[in-house]
Length: 235
Length: 88
Image: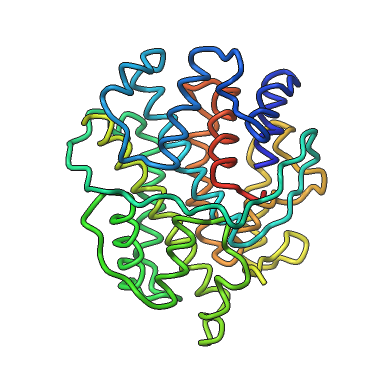
């Protein structure tokens, strides 16, 4: 989170107020521009409960037009993928930042699971951003079709679990060590510590196979988050 | 131990080519780490070199384009990363 707070600071002309509040406080308590406030509220729901978005939110966030909404939903969901991979790999921060991030709360409650399936048809569609839609289609084709190290059927199962958790489809049962790893990637990426990988490593899983599981989980989570959020905005 | 990764300096073959291609993209200076190699978020994908252009090809359509303005895009990115408690 540190590097994008830093990029936000630079993008705001080196003003630290908003990035500091994003990292350490409640940015909605600031005297925000209406578009900033709407974007923060939208991102909070896209990240924590995309199925709960609704037509009422579109009215409330009238300062964001349809193109803004699709852009923000896709960007936030995309960053959910990057966040999950960064946590799985624990890649060190390699930018100088003006505002240090708070310590990670590894005990924080995992994200909620969708209480129901979102059945509405989307009013807003990713096709409104043709370049983004094409890029995600190429990303999806690669992830779901590659023959190894996981079997494509295992990746399809990972996708199905994510569909259920996000409200894209009826939840499917899961169990076992792969399910528990994928569950952490999707619902509690801040818990992707040694213990998350140890059981599968003990069964001889390679680093490449573990990465495949995490990347499939985070990728499918991002794509389905976009789909659910855009359909929920029509309910 | 978290998942392994291959830093730019020790990369070889296809992964090195992908890293170099990522570095050759036009990017504002703020996005270039001082170490001069591929940023850590790209390196985090190193166990699947072919995935890197797929993921970051998507990034260029979202981070490098509107209608959201640059500070708005970074507000989305920073807020999402805070909610996910991203280490990076």
